Image (cartoon, rainbow, N blue to C red; front, top):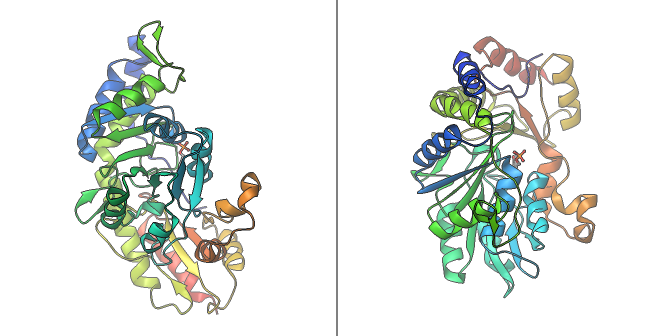
Length: 359
Ligand SMILES: *Cc1c(COP(=O)(O)O)cnc(C)c1O
């Protein structure tokens, strides 16, 4: 089976974890600080604050920006549940704006119409490793005095017009096992804003400003040195990982772009192909689900991210009567196929051959 995702861990990660175990300092210490400093340098922000996972990073960022009950946060309905859930966790109301079918990201042309006096922030998601249209989004945010919280959980190292995803406002990353780089579970908030950084740090550490002195309530969302030790090593490799993903994606696009009924991702140096996602349109000889079964039968991992847009989830019942046609269409058509750095040339050829053989 060619897996759809695979964490790539070498002797560097193993040695780094063993060194932490040998040190006897397992919770937060030097390794977390080292990981934060190197991640901030990588993204080009003043601050980076490590957390337990991407979801708690989003939660802490929203909290730090003062987003609360009665506030609205504009986001995409075509994303992982954590994007919408965390907005609700702080008591705020998600407001969905449909996606641009060409990018799967929030459609900046529809953004302004969704702004109300209650809007406090825009949370664009850089889905599948493709950065949202940040130039336009930042312009709109500035004009209306809104915060930006990037959900960059799938976009480590991605960029748009030469500027890194995660450097446009306050941003959140995930280091879950399937992401472009991993710590098992882990997260990071990046920001240039000193106050936001301080508020995130306090919220993830029990609302404590000095040991055993608390001026607000908070959580324990701290990363461990064990996770950070893995993160430091992964960060040295992310450039190579992403380069290999781009090479694999370019091969797939070159060999699949003329197949009638398939829509393939663009070839771009700024995309990090967290997923290589096809659209199986109704001009293709068989349905998305039939393609999925056939690939599985041939030992080729595949998955639909995401089969149900957030506004159609049971957990978002009050949104179920709303309609976001492009998100719904994408949910019906998308299928992701293996693109991770350990997919071999021979496997890529096999994937292409199977897809091209369907009549
Ligand atoms: C993975 C992911 C998250 C959540 O990250 P976890 O580390 O799994 O909590 C949030 N948003 C998006 C778009 C993701 O892909």
